[in-house]
Length: 263
Ligand code: CA
Image (tube, rainbow, N blue to C red; front, side):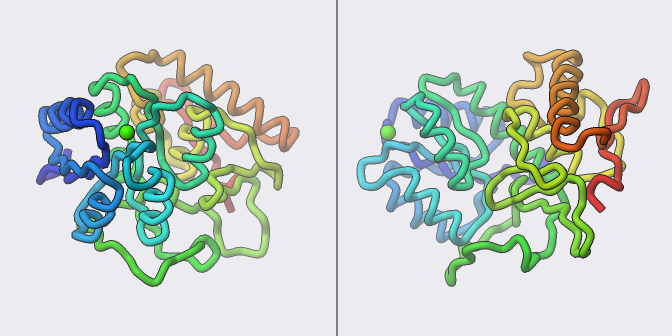
């Protein structure tokens, strides 16, 4: 998809896991750089040029959460957490810190590669928006050079600078979507589906495209999965804004978000 291999930063202290991940990423035509400590990872980040970061939470010198905070203060590079702890709390904390996804150990390197691909595709499909004063939060004085600049899904804001409040609004900092002013309690798939639609209001997405954009492992899913999640997503939108139907079904084509929902 990309012309030159995307450089990925892997921060993981367990050599056996790192070796497997590096092998899988290299086989998938990525260019991984492995660091075994948080400090080494942050130093590598300073050299720039990473399209995505894979970050272990349990590092010997500092917590992966702290590494994530430091990276996030200066960069929107997509981050995937590797977690040995399966507690929901950790996941929520990780995602609130601005991680784009997480993988729980033990994981298959193939699954990780699929998630890396999905996140990179999502980043590429979303046009980089100019830094808007309404969405910029906590910009640190330093910044990591990003080359090529890769915007994570969270950088896409469809919030127009108008006085009228749109029906659907994405709070990029908190990774929450509001409908009619109410925060939606979305599953990961629903959230990613909605983000894909929000990135291009009015554009019709086929089920395949939506699956590629919102699923970590599109091959393991079927068209019906997209339909089922769209259905539950619609129900939640309708619960927040009775009478509204912001997602349009285009028969034989797919789904689109009505432009008026975000304007
Ligand atoms: Ca570890």
